[in-house]
Length: 331
Picture 1 (cartoon, rainbow, N blue to C red):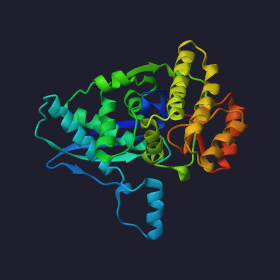
Picture 2 (picture 1 turned 180 degrees about the vertical axis):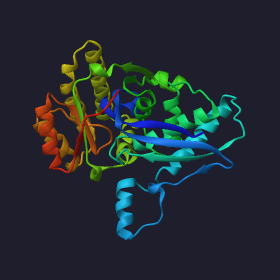
Picture 3 (picture 1 turned 60 degrees about the vertical axis):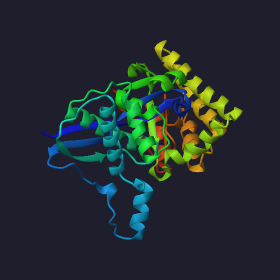
């Protein structure tokens, strides 16, 4: 029997990037793109390489382009890290795994390195496949923490819980990463929000702008750890934007979100260096009347729009920047 599992792309709607600093966020799953894992029993444990894992290239220019769009490492290190974390979790919990091996492979349609969480989707899908194969139940609130540790502890990737939470829960989720909760039990408070409460949303991405999250977050983390007042206050204000967004949605005020989305990016810009190309996407979208903020660490934006005319205007204007616009399929 072949086990097939899937995890979807995600977009941080509000509060991003305060999740890595005990903040608050609202995120949506983006089912337009996903990573899938296939797993079946075999005599030995085999991880089958896919196109991003190749070390054979047509030319030096082919290598350059492949690394620019796919990164250096492909999906195999992510799968190895997920398997290791799963095994160690079972050992800690006294779960004895049967002596059976498997072959595993992955596929992904998530645009790479544009802040839509393609890497963590592979890890989430791998955990789901392992749980089914070995018939192990991991509590849902804890699963995102294990997924994050596969990336942070095993691979040295700088990451927060937000991406992993929304990919494990799916839909739309409000997250409160209260420091005491996260440090004492390993996870925060995660509250699903009815996606039907959301205003009209779009996502736009430009693959040429992709950047690895860790490189972007490192300087801010250093400044935060040093207690720099501007960084601490700004991240607190960004978290407060998510709180306001949550209050607006549960009180049926989706019309409040456009201003909050814009405020989220404006606050982020106080402490982060924004490339001209990324800023051009934000400003172009806003000139159409839409709101705009980063969906993740850069390369993709998310925002609200009013009607089909505005959406068509977004398509036209962002296409001039070689950016693709989609309506996210959430539920």
